[in-house]
Length: 371
Image (cartoon, rainbow, N blue to C red; front, side, top):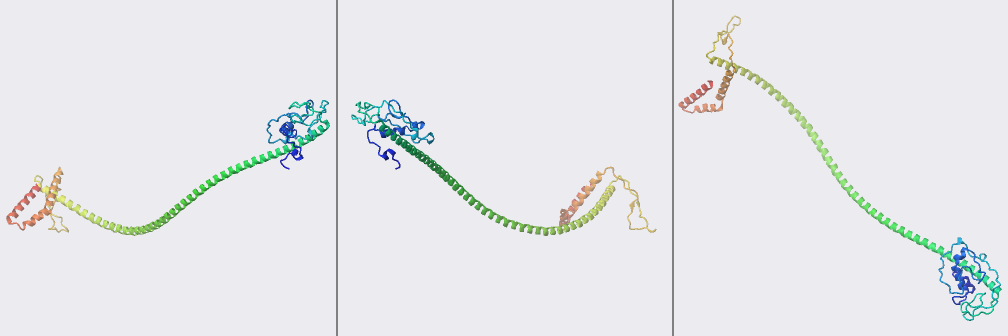
């Protein structure tokens, strides 16, 4: 029967007062289990037969905390560890079982009751008491062994319970960590989904931009090809136009050179004419001798003007000649101007008196210019 002491199983438990024989001894032996484990038990050889380091069983037991576990390595109390005390010749000869005054069970060597002081009768037989003590000693050893086994089981159960509690705490911590990891992974998954969605939108936008860029590139390529083609045609037209302009320019340059040569000749003739006029108008200069033209094949030519045989003298200062040329050119310009032509046209319609007046004005201007 688990959980029941051997004394109760054998019916040796006496439900008396708190100073009964069997139960207090068993309780005190169990309470003194650490002391028993420290060394073998021995009986006191002088006054009584109570155990060493055990309180008086005939007094009220003190409250003792029962240890939760007993280390098996310290040793167990067995029958071989209990020593029998030597027989004493001072034991009482009176036989008694209980005190008639208080009902207490006195010790075997007591004459008076230690509780109420009643004189006891003849003691019990020593041999029967020793046999009973041996049986009680064996029962006590079994009781201690059972209690030690129970305490060991209780210790193991406590350790298993602590281990289960630690495992439960570890599982709770692991479950908490797993829940936190699940939350973190859920958050990371949501962030990853959001990033994938944003990347998908960005990819769509980039694909749209790429399609637009491809279309723009095709348009620009066609435009460049068209521009190159137009540029080629324009280059051909420009080349032909450049050639035409160069031909026209060369023709104009030739005509301009010819006109320049003609104008240079005319200027030279005009300069010679001006010089001759200036020389003719200067009265201080000597005259020139005229000579007839050379005859050709012995025959003289009558239609050739006579030329001077001497060179015309050069003036000391050319500025007077240049001033004369300028005045002469201004007179020619005024004569050929549209204003004088208009005056000449009006002169055809004016009366003779007005015409004469205009002619006189013109002569005056011409004379002033010559001067």
